[in-house]
Length: 212
Image (tube, rainbow, N blue to C red; front, side):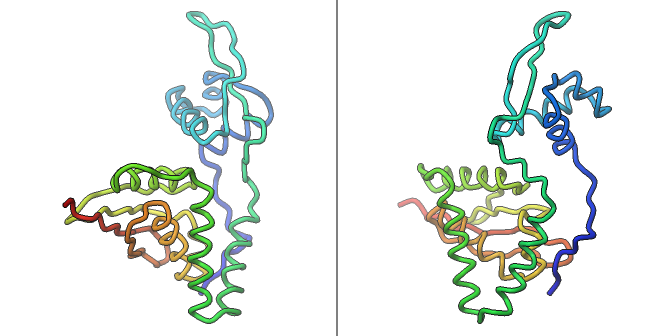
């Protein structure tokens, strides 16, 4: 059982760098690209993601050579979450729970955690495949890079990483929370088959009921 260290330092990605710049002042795509040393298309792609997450919005425009350029800023009340405390505290919390609770109690807590997390999402509707797609979108909002594939009457949700890697590193049973989340969101049977190695990655199999 491992616990996340305070000493882990990861370089800021393009998304975080854009947000940090917008925390200081509003910027156009062009000015952000210049400050970051990347192409405008690369900035536009990140801005589009940040808009979908409700973090960034258009807050004005400035005259351009051809047409006005949108000025972007952080949406009031947006949750930026740059604190390094979150993953470390989560890792140690899971470690403490694993020591204090027996196996049944720990699994019950993880299932309830997944259910409570699911309650923060909009109620999903539609046929089973549509609900799975909506659940996948919710995972992406949480920071997962999960993708969906179909095989033998099942839908596989998998990724090369894990949105709760720190918790899984502390105790692999933490994956139960994500399994419970998907069950709650889709209303379908979900089986967890994640990789619990040095670099945890997600894999959940969702059984699609046969059409009558």
